[in-house]
Amino acid sequence: MRLAGKVAIVTGGGSGFGEGIVRKFVTEGALVVLMDRDEAAAARVAAEAGENVRPITGDVSTLGSFEAAADLARSAFGGLDILVNNAGVAQPPLALETMDEEMFDRIANVNMRSIYNGARAVVAHFKSIKSGAILNVASTGGVSPRPNLTWYNASKGWAIAATRAMAVELAPFGIRVNAINPVAGDTPLLSTFIGSGEENRARVVATIPIGRLSTPADMGNAAAFLCSDEASMITGVDLNVDGGKCI
Image 1 (cartoon, rainbow, N blue to C red):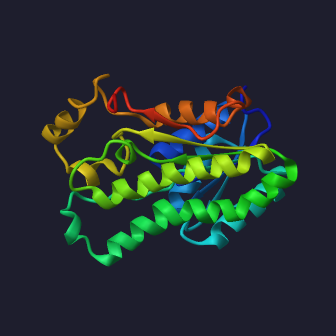
Image 2 (image 1 turned 45 degrees about the horizontal axis):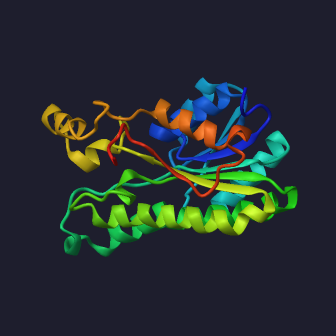
């Protein structure tokens, strides 16, 4: 098992890509603190995944939530080795000048500030043990933006730039930082991007050469590899998990 004995925090683990990452980590032997703002969702996934998952309710826009998750990791499992910044929010298609400040602030707080908060909560510990892996879940929107999703795309581009900057600074301390860029997937956020209906779904699938949407399992597989010792020579990478979308 590629993550045997590793202790991880996964944000937004109560649904979607985060749930897929939690489930894959557990099958690979990891001990997981699952942080989600939805207490019931976190409890459900933890109950289904088994005794190696501890749920905690938290808001990734606050440093205190990350500190509480890190404390739980140490008290429940005796340490901390991995942070997965998965929690994110989407936006509906909008002309860029029409987004109100409330929506913009939410995108910035969840998609960007969360990475900053996570780093503040775990990097000192990772430096002390001279190891650690941080994975940021960005998006193909940060690599190949689509019109009318400008501020979401920008937040994910920021996440990719932050990943690279963090990787350069933290590599001398034995800490690796990578990102994955999912294409549109079968998650609760999908309808926010594309609306409902099979026609909209088919239109999106038609843009993906592999011919399907991404799945939580796809993200779990990519995340498990990048956070494992098998990827010990990989840092600063943003991996497109996109079925060829960004080719």
